[in-house]
Structures are given as C-alpha cells and as structure tokens.
Image 1 (tube, one colour):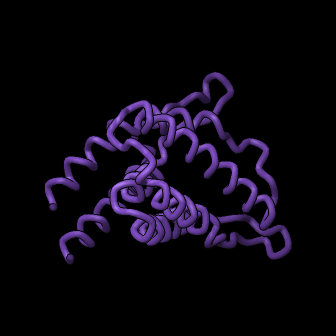
Image 2 (cartoon, rainbow, N blue to C red):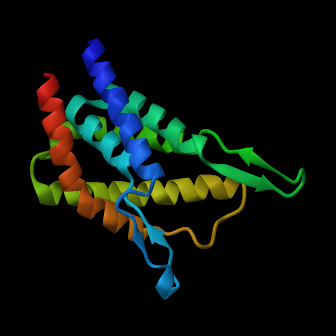
Amino acid sequence: MFLNIAVVALGILLSFFLKGINFLSLNFEFMGGGILYPDFLLIFVIFFALRRGEFSGLWIGFVAGLLEDSGLLSFSDKTGEFLPVIGTHALVYCLTGFILGKINRLIDKDRVPTIVLLVFGTTLAERILVWLLLGVLEDFNKSYSFLGPAVYTALLSPIWFFVLGLVYKMQE
C-alpha cells in the first residue's frame, strides 16, 4: 500500500517537474507561434484512471491539478498584484480522472491508436474547459492554444504510457 502511494506520488512529482522545465517542448516562436509542450500530468492522470478506476483517477487528478494550479498566477488590475487562481486545473483533472475511470472497462488500454485518440480528445476537452473556467474567473486568453498541445501530447502519449506501464508492472 505504502509503495503504491509512494510510486504514484513520485510519478506525479516527476510529471510536474517535466512539464515545469518544458521537457520535449517545441519552439515555434520563429514562425510567430508559441511553444508547444506535452501535458505530462494529464497523461499521468489518464494512465492511472484507465488502469485503476475512478477513485484513483479522481484523487490523482485532484493532486495533479493542484500542482498545476500552484504555478498559475493572474494579474489583478484593481490591486496591481499577482493573485493565484487555485482550483481550475484541480476541478478539470478530477472530472477527467473520474470520467475516464468510469469508462475504463469500455476502452482497449493496450492499443496505440486508442491511446492516441483518447489522449487527444481528453487533452482538447481539458484545454477548452480550463480556458472557459479561467475566462469566467478572469479574462479570456486570446492566444490560448487548443489543437497544438492536444496533438503533441497525443503523439507522445504511447511512449509515456509504455514507461508508466513498465513502472506500474514493476511495483505489483
């Protein structure tokens, strides 16, 4: 039990670290675009929601979402200072983990096309929901990208699923 929790916590922290340093990011600023980076935390939530069910997806999504929100600050024009926006990613990642955990019996978790399509759809839905929530709480970000990160995350997800599968099988 403790080993399971320790491995999951270490995986969440590693995924957060990889996302924080923009590991495997693609820079398109020379073409007037931005930087694309894969969402390692979301892939981690998807993996454990599919492998362990809705309860694990729910709490892993909540912890991963809080970690994601810890680095999210917004500037307030009224007070002239940065304010943290806590809870947007936590809510979306919780819902994602719970819903995917509920439908995990219906999905073939070992086929690469299924993983790619599932991660693409989930990442696209997550980006849209986060954009809407942040838009309601603050202002809508006009340069928030949807398709680029979803495609890039989906393309890297089979590799990350394979690595997580090796670690997950080692701890059983």
